[in-house]
Length: 136
Image (cartoon, rainbow, N blue to C red; front, side):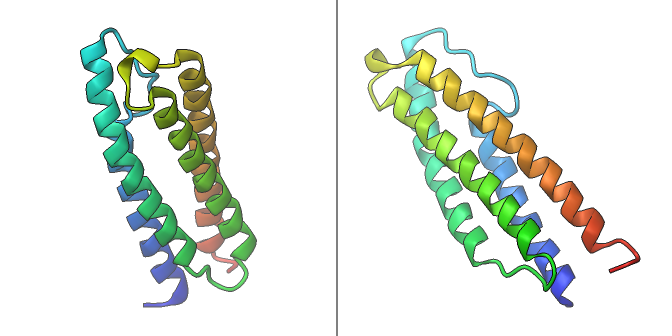
């Protein structure tokens, strides 16, 4: 497998993992919390999912970009790390105790997560176009 194909596979694997984890975080839509029971369930899902995201981030940091694509890779890794930090803040806002839920902090972190997601999507598209264009 050539460097570009291997890189694309590795990034695709991370993307698939991120997609699975994002389901636990409510997908792309804002999360609605209407009861303490829903919040308790959300906390448990988030804690497990956050650990999975952190593992994906560790794996992402180990991926080697093909020559000439290092800057794009770093840009995408930075966006992914922003996503993970925002997710950590979302989890912190619920802090394991439904009575201490801080909805404003949660909403801000959720918006940061959405912005990071957009950066990842845009960077991935740009990288794919550069990597597999006929000129490269």
